[in-house]
Length: 171
Image 1 (cartoon, rainbow, N blue to C red):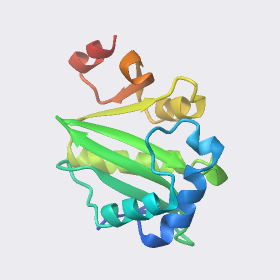
Image 2 (image 1 turned 135 degrees about the vertical axis):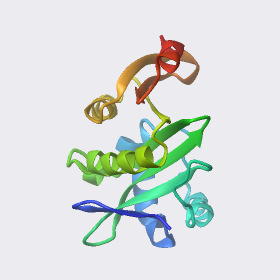
Image 3 (image 1 turned 90 degrees about the vertical axis):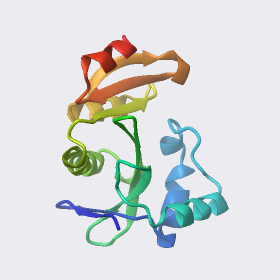
């Protein structure tokens, strides 16, 4: 079971109660603008939640984490953790209703600490579209280094705790 708290947030497993919040922000133009391949159909989101509701944070398999307000348990976003080959790739989407309030920074900061303790030798990588200035600024604020543009993904790569070998792959 996933359960990590911050001052304002509770990081937890997704649940069927989250379907309306996910449907809302995944289908909102502001949030969907930079997302690729996310389920947007109500039934697809229900099925996704059903598949991911018992995820555990691990370096052995991917997981989906709901970010909820601590006081109300309302889901305001999600973080995807994909571990592979000593690299943890993180993706995130936060509801347009909660942008620019520090929630993504707060959630990702505590999750980075948790994952880094779990796998201190692992590298962290995130990709974002070049036009997604808010996400780029968030990654920089979190201590990520701009690794460059990846044409095959049409994305900008950012790394934290990366090695020179990894960084040279992106130059």
